[in-house]
Image 1 (cartoon, one colour):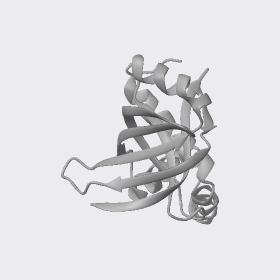
Image 2 (image 1 turned 180 degrees about the vertical axis):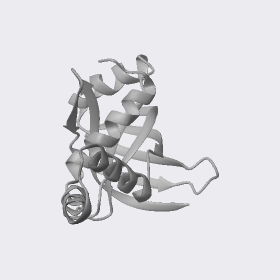
Image 3 (image 1 turned 135 degrees about the vertical axis):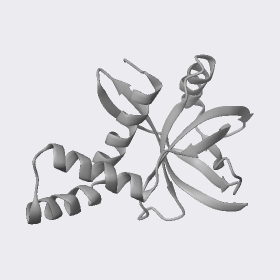
Length: 158
């Protein structure tokens, strides 16, 4: 197992066909790569108590979470994961969430997704390469596209 510091945690939701980023302020956070065949990770996030209702609702509805995390350094690329709340504990300074998660896609998946979109939009040659570089740098658009595909795979129609 490898343990990393969790520096950013956002939940992604689909509202009226659009992807909405919901930043979750972290008090503390760890993310653990379990290095198992199933590719599962564990996230332990300590968050404000006012976030509790949202997580309880998601757990009770048995909705998988779509989350964007940044690990170790705020300058790192965000990773998109899907997960479920496994446990929740009350703390004096907030709540501790234990989330079992899996990576939604690697760098190759992201590059493939960007290239498919560019081809559908009619980009070619040098123009395609330049637009690819722009989109690859824009992590918010990338996250939204990846999340959209995840929600479509869940059959979500929100």
